[in-house]
Image (tube, rainbow, N blue to C red; front, side, top):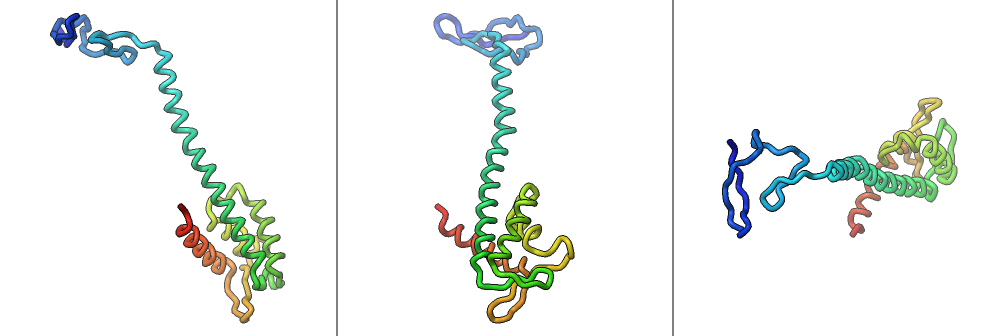
Length: 168
């Protein structure tokens, strides 16, 4: 025999024999005023649905925000290339910043679904030629030549530091 605690009519806690043989209640019962009452399955279905929605939708919402931040960073880098005073070397041909930005933007539009970080953008769109395998270079006004990926990764780090200190 199982004993359960129950409040009587005067509000005093008493002990009485339970009709439940196992001492367990089903998931569809709750304790209300000292007695177990069945809960309609609909409530459990709602709770289960709400839990599933939180698990499935919340990460997607955050991913959407992340995509917007990546796109903003990529657009900043493309603008940085466009407004720079360096010469871009692509497959031994020299291009202005504006021309290079146009080419990089076309590659970005092509690979947009594969890009999940600004670093991936630099790797896929601004590092080298997919056709020839040759790396892209930038040539400064002083004649220094360095890989475009290195140049853009440095600017990406500067951009992140600047935004880190100006964010609320």
